[in-house]
Amino acid sequence: MDLLKQRILNDGEALNENVLKVDSFLNHQIDPLLMKEVGQEFINRFEDVEFNKVLTLESSGIAPSVMVGLLLDIPVVFGRKRQSLTLSDDLYTSQVFSYTKQETNTIAVAKKFLSKDDKVLIIDDFLANGEAAGALIDVVEQSGAEIVGVGIVIEKAFQSGGKILRDKGYRVESLARIVSMYDKQVKFVGDN
Ligand code: 5GP
Figure 1: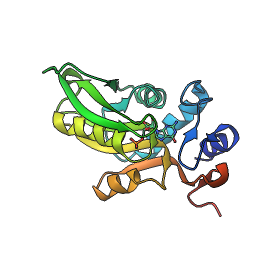
Figure 2: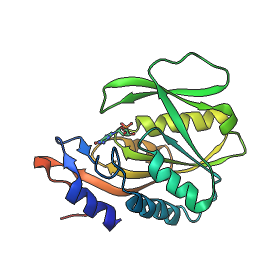
Figure 3: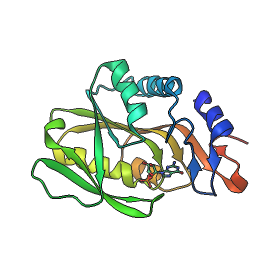
């Protein structure tokens, strides 16, 4: 997706070889027009599958997910992150180790919002080691719902998450795939 790649090149900041800061359009300030294009691109990529719900993770997955929900008129559910969680029978929970924050969170989704009849598209802002997406997959599997695919705004293809998910058979569609960030230069898969 050229618009997104160009925006990453213009406004993204590689903090080091591993972490990309995109807080001017995705992670803090949000560019709604770009998010709308991102939402439309996810819809195009998953045009051949049916789904009735989007599942994401708070907070940065919400903006792109809501655009998909709005354009298709389907609900968006986000996993809530909590440091410690009082166990509840009404929740599906899973553990996520956050690579950027170096801490483990529990994510929770209310059982009433996911059922075995749902067909779910999972969306997140970044894919790095696959922890967040893996936890979202885990809660969908607990619910018995079907996962139609995983949509990622920015995949860091030099980290293991994409390979892990694809090797497990999940369909992963990433709108921008970064191959390296040496010397703070962002390079995408397919660049020379
Ligand atoms: P994973 O769970 O795949 O290791 O990492 C994905 C999650 O960590 C995303 O939900 C995102 O919030 C955060 N993350 C991972 N790498 C980056 C990065 O380079 N930049 C930003 N802004 N967030 C990241």
